[in-house]
Length: 143
Image 1 (tube, rainbow, N blue to C red):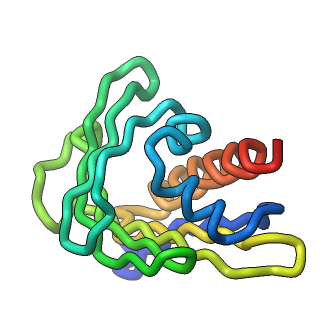
Image 2 (cartoon, rainbow, N blue to C red; image 1 turned 180 degrees about the vertical axis):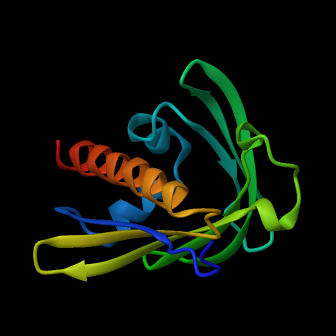
């Protein structure tokens, strides 16, 4: 097995300013609209917890993590653990998820990078999920 499992990476350009995209990433009402009905709870302060609760493929979940970096309108990095993986709640079973915002002439490029994937297939599945979430975000913000 390859020790250098690749990151899951997805990006999209949204026709909205970075400030509006940032709000959509951090406001629970916005998140619920495009992120598969997820209820997110956090202060978004570095070191504070973040939880994601909802239903996925017919199963209730409550995922958790910690805010690692918060640079408004630019960068949000968190850890993420989901009990649905069946793995124990140990640091090595947490992903890192980074949301990066870059201004573009036609809006804001939103990039998501998920690290610490256990396999290529996990990275591929995560990329598909993040592509879908970003597509939903774009549709939501461009309405």
